[in-house]
Amino acid sequence: EREGSEGEGEGGGRNGASLPAPDVSLSALLLKLLPLRLASSAAFWLSSLYVPVWLRSPIYRAWSFACGEPDVDGLEKPLASYPTLNHWFRRGLSPGARPMGDADLLAPCDGVVTARG
Image (cartoon, rainbow, N blue to C red; front, side):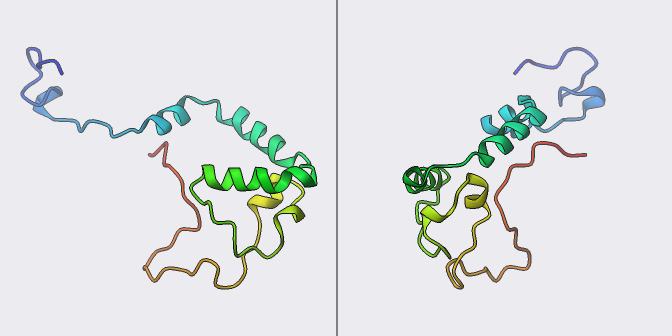
């Protein structure tokens, strides 16, 4: 970090104001640089592709493992019954498979905030 030049004050900003260092993870930075419209279209196309029955179980298990959810028990239907990744993403769970928390605010998915304001 460089020291403030003349007129910048102690905080390194104008009038001595200190700006907090951004806390940006590498994945969030890559998401900001990614052409989101193109990535969204590519993800839609990929998720709409038909998956052969013999590949469904290995692909869905690998996807779940890569996303940190290696347990695929508690599904409404067998893995081979989801013809596309889109169907797999929107799958239902058996009642009680993932109980809801008791917090005041619950979010149905994980995500990263890449923009604000």
